[in-house]
Each structure stands twice: as C-alpha cells, then as structure tokens.
Image (cartoon, rainbow, N blue to C red):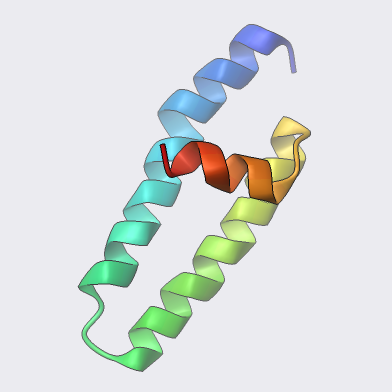
Length: 65
C-alpha cells in the first residue's frame, strides 16, 4: 500500500471502526457483552496493524488521540 492509500484506509476505515467498537464496550450492559467487544477490538486491532505494517501499540496510541 502506498502512503496516501494507507492514510485514507486509517482515517476513514480503521479509526472509525475501532472507535465504534470502543463505544460499544462503554455501552455494554453486562460483562459478557464487554468481554465480546474487548476480544473483537483486540482481534481487529491486530488485523489492522498488520495491514498497515505497524505495531499494535502504535496503532492503539493513534486511535486514542
């Protein structure tokens, strides 16, 4: 992926999707739901980090900004 496509992919797909999952974690009504969304968040974070060619911790740091 070239730099411009990576930026677009991050800004419009990755960041929004991961922030949606984090919002669901906060809105969860019970521990089972929270656990599901935490697992889903971790899996998606790993997949997106690999696709962008960066480490998960850096991607998570950028998402939180």
